[in-house]
Image 1 (cartoon, rainbow, N blue to C red):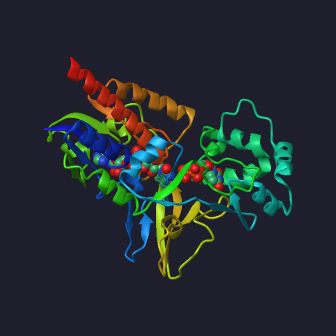
Image 2: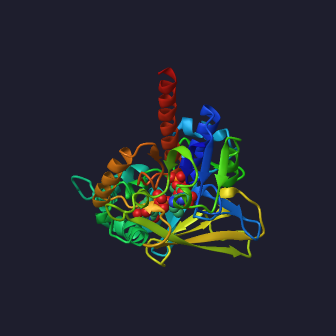
Image 3: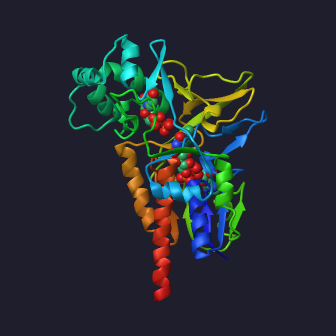
Length: 370
Ligand code: FAD
Ligand code: UDP
């Protein structure tokens, strides 16, 4: 008899498996329908010996000391600050839009003070700011919105930014400084030996059993367990009772090139050209030295593995119905990006899992007292 069946060996499931096994001495079975652990953060060495991320670039960044310190028990780190260029009007310019972006794009030599005035002069007044169009247009005006955000978003999400919640494009800030880092979080680093190695450590406790190539639906009646933690799509769990929740998918096209370097930075975004959104060169992320280099193109798709929840009011309404059902389901806990339908980064999923663990540990304590 397992104390917990955990469905999904991504960050949500694996962090909970580790905590329950090591802190509460629980017997855990963690399963995944894929043939590997680490969920979408999975990385591996390809046939050329280059470390690559199977499901697109995963860059770790967080402001949470708790999350960083927690993960540091399972990996050493390689300091890494992510930089991205966007291909716009025939040039490669920094994104997030910053002082250098504007000077390069328009052939100007503005100062930080001037560029603040420039943004104010082109910004449109929007009130309230609700959508992913509003958030950009109200900050940098329509022209920059169209050059950098409109078409990228249409490609990535299959819909116009005006149909998406503001939180989507608000992920990308605008700066008056020359800071060209994609993230400004306190902790920015990559696991020194990769994500899969980190997950192997997370799941190495003797109380944890791992079962791959297994869909929970195929074993749920056969393996006895007391409680379940579910990290797959929440609508699927409930048999799509309230309809399908849209998840955006991607197709990844991986290539290895016979040269040591391909791009000027780790990622180049293509808002206005091509069917793909961006190209990533993994060696920038991993720091690996190799004669060849591996890159990945991301082609957004409506169908396929669920990668992104789609933040917009009508989807939030459907999710809330599923959430009510989830809350009323005894002995099953829903956690992670797919099960709580949240556009979360890895650190947010780790934080969410640690919060659920604290709740479970408290319940355990109360149970022991009564
Ligand atoms: P997942 O990693 O998706 O794990 C869920 C697991 O459940 C999967 O392995 C799945 O196979 C399994 N599963 C589902 N249903 C079943 C079932 N019925 N039976 C058995 N197993 C099942 N975050 C960052 O912080 N930085 C980044 O740079 C970044 N880049 C990203 C790039 C892309 C292209 C994508 C798609 C995501 C990116 N993320 C990034 C987000 C990151 O991938 C997620 O936050 C994180 O992986 C979510 O972890 P999770 O455990 O919730 O879900
Ligand atoms: N975005 C854009 N142009 C860019 C970069 C991002 O329009 O050059 C928008 C787009 O809608 C994207 C969102 O901002 O989906 C969030 O970007 P981020 O890089 O955080 O996406 P992720 O890495 O999660 O795919």
